[in-house]
Image (cartoon, rainbow, N blue to C red; front, side, top):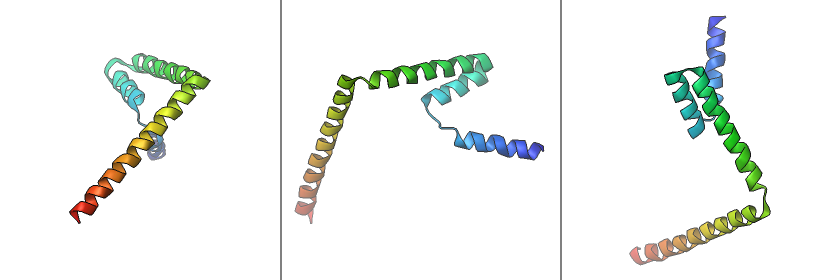
Length: 90
């Protein structure tokens, strides 16, 4: 039974998405105890919920789409410049 619990905990730890909030939550939990880690996790959940609510606003969606288009444009431009430089070398 102990081996089963060990493998279940190992499976959960592998499936747990590792992000900045998760790392900080784990660090605070190990250093200061469960309550500190739990409060950091609650703060992270609040941040995610607030960000998702803000991202549903139309203006922010358009700014995000515009930034994505600009980044794709830069990528295409730099790819073009790379291809021209590569042709000169070869």
